[in-house]
View 1 (tube, rainbow, N blue to C red):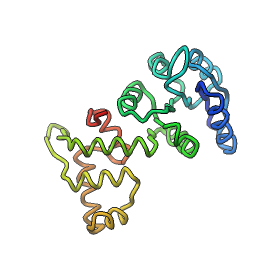
View 2: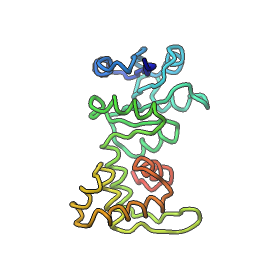
View 3: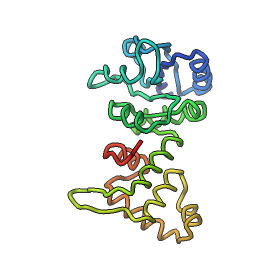
Length: 217
Protein backbone atom coordinates (compact mmCIF):
# COMPACT_ATOMS: atom_id res chain seq x y z
CA UNK A 1 0.00 0.00 0.00
CA UNK A 2 1.45 3.37 -1.05
CA UNK A 3 2.06 6.11 1.49
CA UNK A 4 -0.75 8.63 1.81
CA UNK A 5 -0.10 12.27 0.97
CA UNK A 6 -0.50 14.32 4.14
CA UNK A 7 -2.33 17.58 3.48
CA UNK A 8 -2.63 20.62 5.75
CA UNK A 9 -5.22 23.32 4.95
CA UNK A 10 -5.17 27.03 5.83
CA UNK A 11 -8.05 29.40 5.07
CA UNK A 12 -10.12 31.80 7.16
CA UNK A 13 -13.43 30.43 5.85
CA UNK A 14 -14.57 27.33 7.72
CA UNK A 15 -17.03 26.50 4.95
CA UNK A 16 -14.23 26.26 2.39
CA UNK A 17 -12.10 24.17 4.76
CA UNK A 18 -15.02 21.80 5.26
CA UNK A 19 -15.61 21.57 1.50
CA UNK A 20 -11.97 20.78 0.71
CA UNK A 21 -11.82 18.22 3.49
CA UNK A 22 -14.93 16.54 2.12
CA UNK A 23 -13.40 16.32 -1.36
CA UNK A 24 -10.03 15.05 -0.16
CA UNK A 25 -11.45 12.51 2.27
CA UNK A 26 -13.19 10.72 -0.60
CA UNK A 27 -9.75 9.90 -2.01
CA UNK A 28 -7.84 7.16 -0.23
CA UNK A 29 -4.50 8.65 -1.34
CA UNK A 30 -4.87 11.67 0.95
CA UNK A 31 -4.81 12.24 4.69
CA UNK A 32 -5.97 15.69 5.85
CA UNK A 33 -3.84 16.09 8.96
CA UNK A 34 -5.17 19.45 10.16
CA UNK A 35 -6.14 23.01 9.33
CA UNK A 36 -5.72 26.63 10.44
CA UNK A 37 -8.12 29.56 10.15
CA UNK A 38 -5.28 32.11 10.04
CA UNK A 39 -1.62 32.11 9.11
CA UNK A 40 0.01 32.52 12.51
CA UNK A 41 0.68 28.84 13.21
CA UNK A 42 0.61 27.28 9.75
CA UNK A 43 4.33 26.52 9.54
CA UNK A 44 4.69 25.07 13.04
CA UNK A 45 1.54 22.97 12.84
CA UNK A 46 2.25 21.70 9.33
CA UNK A 47 5.75 20.66 10.42
CA UNK A 48 4.39 19.06 13.59
CA UNK A 49 1.86 17.08 11.54
CA UNK A 50 4.60 16.13 9.03
CA UNK A 51 2.51 17.51 6.18
CA UNK A 52 3.65 16.89 2.61
CA UNK A 53 1.47 19.60 1.09
CA UNK A 54 0.06 22.83 2.54
CA UNK A 55 -2.90 24.36 0.70
CA UNK A 56 -3.05 27.97 1.87
CA UNK A 57 -5.11 31.10 1.24
CA UNK A 58 -3.37 34.41 0.48
CA UNK A 59 -5.68 36.61 2.55
CA UNK A 60 -6.04 35.48 6.16
CA UNK A 61 -6.30 37.42 9.44
CA UNK A 62 -3.22 38.03 11.57
CA UNK A 63 -0.86 36.68 8.90
CA UNK A 64 -1.51 36.11 5.21
CA UNK A 65 -0.14 33.51 2.84
CA UNK A 66 2.56 35.76 1.41
CA UNK A 67 3.92 36.46 4.90
CA UNK A 68 3.93 32.75 5.64
CA UNK A 69 5.84 32.04 2.41
CA UNK A 70 8.44 34.65 3.35
CA UNK A 71 8.97 32.90 6.69
CA UNK A 72 9.47 29.42 5.27
CA UNK A 73 12.90 27.94 5.96
CA UNK A 74 15.26 27.78 2.98
CA UNK A 75 14.62 24.07 2.68
CA UNK A 76 10.91 23.80 3.51
CA UNK A 77 9.74 20.41 4.80
CA UNK A 78 6.53 20.67 2.75
CA UNK A 79 5.34 22.01 -0.61
CA UNK A 80 2.85 24.86 -0.79
CA UNK A 81 -0.14 25.41 -3.05
CA UNK A 82 -1.70 28.86 -2.94
CA UNK A 83 -5.48 29.14 -2.89
CA UNK A 84 -6.92 32.55 -3.74
CA UNK A 85 -10.05 34.42 -4.74
CA UNK A 86 -7.88 36.42 -7.12
CA UNK A 87 -6.49 35.55 -10.54
CA UNK A 88 -4.20 38.58 -10.55
CA UNK A 89 -0.97 37.71 -12.39
CA UNK A 90 1.05 40.02 -10.14
CA UNK A 91 0.09 37.83 -7.19
CA UNK A 92 0.82 34.64 -9.11
CA UNK A 93 4.32 35.87 -9.98
CA UNK A 94 5.00 36.97 -6.41
CA UNK A 95 4.01 33.74 -4.69
CA UNK A 96 5.80 31.54 -7.22
CA UNK A 97 9.00 33.52 -6.77
CA UNK A 98 8.59 33.06 -3.00
CA UNK A 99 8.55 29.30 -3.42
CA UNK A 100 4.92 28.27 -3.89
CA UNK A 101 4.56 25.22 -6.12
CA UNK A 102 1.01 25.76 -7.32
CA UNK A 103 -1.77 28.33 -7.66
CA UNK A 104 -5.50 27.62 -7.59
CA UNK A 105 -8.38 30.07 -7.71
CA UNK A 106 -11.13 29.29 -5.22
CA UNK A 107 -13.61 29.08 -8.09
CA UNK A 108 -11.85 26.01 -9.48
CA UNK A 109 -10.49 24.54 -6.25
CA UNK A 110 -13.20 21.94 -5.72
CA UNK A 111 -12.76 20.26 -9.08
CA UNK A 112 -8.98 20.69 -9.32
CA UNK A 113 -7.64 20.25 -5.78
CA UNK A 114 -6.97 16.52 -6.19
CA UNK A 115 -5.06 17.01 -9.45
CA UNK A 116 -3.14 19.98 -8.02
CA UNK A 117 -1.93 18.06 -4.97
CA UNK A 118 -0.92 15.02 -7.01
CA UNK A 119 1.00 17.14 -9.54
CA UNK A 120 2.82 19.19 -6.89
CA UNK A 121 3.65 16.13 -4.81
CA UNK A 122 5.18 14.54 -7.92
CA UNK A 123 7.62 17.44 -8.13
CA UNK A 124 5.94 19.57 -10.78
CA UNK A 125 4.26 23.00 -10.57
CA UNK A 126 0.50 23.36 -10.98
CA UNK A 127 -1.65 26.21 -12.27
CA UNK A 128 -5.40 25.94 -12.67
CA UNK A 129 -6.77 26.57 -16.17
CA UNK A 130 -7.90 30.13 -15.35
CA UNK A 131 -4.35 31.11 -14.44
CA UNK A 132 -2.80 29.33 -17.41
CA UNK A 133 -5.22 31.12 -19.76
CA UNK A 134 -4.26 34.52 -18.34
CA UNK A 135 -0.54 33.79 -18.41
CA UNK A 136 -0.54 32.67 -22.03
CA UNK A 137 -2.87 35.48 -23.08
CA UNK A 138 -0.41 37.97 -21.60
CA UNK A 139 2.54 36.04 -23.07
CA UNK A 140 1.06 36.13 -26.57
CA UNK A 141 -0.20 39.71 -26.31
CA UNK A 142 3.25 41.03 -25.53
CA UNK A 143 4.96 38.89 -28.23
CA UNK A 144 8.22 38.98 -26.29
CA UNK A 145 11.70 38.88 -27.72
CA UNK A 146 13.24 35.80 -26.17
CA UNK A 147 16.85 35.36 -25.17
CA UNK A 148 18.03 31.76 -25.11
CA UNK A 149 21.68 30.89 -24.54
CA UNK A 150 22.71 34.35 -25.77
CA UNK A 151 20.82 34.06 -29.07
CA UNK A 152 18.02 36.56 -29.73
CA UNK A 153 14.96 34.98 -31.29
CA UNK A 154 11.32 35.95 -31.72
CA UNK A 155 8.35 33.65 -31.55
CA UNK A 156 6.29 33.80 -34.73
CA UNK A 157 2.59 34.60 -34.68
CA UNK A 158 1.85 30.98 -35.54
CA UNK A 159 4.02 29.71 -32.68
CA UNK A 160 2.18 32.05 -30.30
CA UNK A 161 -1.16 30.75 -31.58
CA UNK A 162 -0.02 27.22 -30.84
CA UNK A 163 1.22 28.24 -27.39
CA UNK A 164 -2.20 29.68 -26.63
CA UNK A 165 -3.98 26.50 -27.69
CA UNK A 166 -1.50 24.32 -25.81
CA UNK A 167 -2.28 26.32 -22.69
CA UNK A 168 -5.94 25.45 -23.25
CA UNK A 169 -4.91 21.77 -23.36
CA UNK A 170 -5.65 21.28 -27.07
CA UNK A 171 -3.97 18.22 -28.53
CA UNK A 172 -2.15 18.13 -31.87
CA UNK A 173 -5.22 17.12 -33.87
CA UNK A 174 -7.40 19.80 -32.26
CA UNK A 175 -4.75 22.49 -32.89
CA UNK A 176 -4.53 21.32 -36.49
CA UNK A 177 -8.29 21.70 -36.96
CA UNK A 178 -8.46 25.05 -35.16
CA UNK A 179 -5.65 26.65 -37.19
CA UNK A 180 -6.32 24.79 -40.49
CA UNK A 181 -2.81 23.38 -40.67
CA UNK A 182 -1.50 19.82 -40.82
CA UNK A 183 -0.63 17.85 -37.71
CA UNK A 184 2.93 17.65 -39.04
CA UNK A 185 3.11 21.46 -39.14
CA UNK A 186 1.76 21.66 -35.59
CA UNK A 187 4.44 19.28 -34.35
CA UNK A 188 7.16 21.23 -36.15
CA UNK A 189 6.04 24.53 -34.61
CA UNK A 190 5.80 22.98 -31.15
CA UNK A 191 9.34 21.62 -31.39
CA UNK A 192 10.59 24.99 -32.64
CA UNK A 193 9.18 27.16 -29.89
CA UNK A 194 10.01 24.68 -27.14
CA UNK A 195 13.59 24.63 -28.42
CA UNK A 196 13.71 28.44 -28.56
CA UNK A 197 12.59 28.71 -24.96
CA UNK A 198 14.65 25.72 -23.81
CA UNK A 199 11.66 24.09 -22.08
CA UNK A 200 9.99 20.71 -22.48
CA UNK A 201 6.35 21.06 -21.41
CA UNK A 202 3.41 23.49 -21.28
CA UNK A 203 3.98 24.01 -17.55
CA UNK A 204 7.61 24.69 -18.36
CA UNK A 205 6.43 27.49 -20.64
CA UNK A 206 4.30 28.93 -17.83
CA UNK A 207 7.30 28.90 -15.47
CA UNK A 208 9.47 30.49 -18.16
CA UNK A 209 6.95 33.29 -18.74
CA UNK A 210 6.80 34.09 -15.02
CA UNK A 211 10.52 33.84 -14.36
CA UNK A 212 11.48 36.07 -17.28
CA UNK A 213 8.80 38.71 -16.68
CA UNK A 214 7.01 38.07 -19.95
CA UNK A 215 3.73 38.10 -18.04
CA UNK A 216 2.34 41.59 -17.65
CA UNK A 217 -0.33 41.98 -14.92
